[in-house]
Length: 275
Image (cartoon, rainbow, N blue to C red):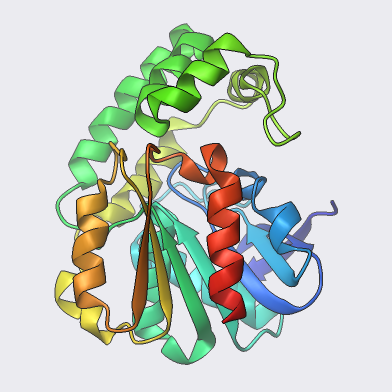
């Protein structure tokens, strides 16, 4: 698929457009990139115009070496919508992307049709914890990318899916990826420490628990029963506070459920957007 670049807030954001129809923006998580949505794009783009993009300091977007705030991420999303002359859209965010979307929604509610928030949180004290764990993971990745990958699967996936990956590292899941593909990708394109620390700064001071009641757009919350990074308990609290929401919990799944349980999540998203 052809990649494009948009001049947004003084930097270049890399983006792609798939399909035709009502626009959907997909906002990826911490340390991720637009390709992280590869298990959603083929399905969603059958009925919608799907816009994926690399956040600043991610993927092929520009990476100014300075701390990022949640507001900066949200303004980049607005800037890309303005650049593409899209006034209103469905917006889907996972993990950090879900936090960006919440911030965006509170500031620009008129730009949103429906929200989908996946494996995310309303915030709290997490910035320093994430920065420290990031440095540890980068050190492990430098020593042995394959072992670092398998270590990360303990946090990303439920043991059932993890065992499938281990038994069949060459198997193409959803005809899209294998464990070997993922290992090769992080070996060839390892994350950059400066980028990750700058992104992690966005978690500092982000806590919108007391403002969740202001998110009034129709909202689908998708949590994973065994999420060890952002536990489902946080999303259950969000469901209690957000007025117009549906909460769906993917059983026997972890933080990486958009990959490991893509079929179920895609079906939930399409059903919700079609209502």
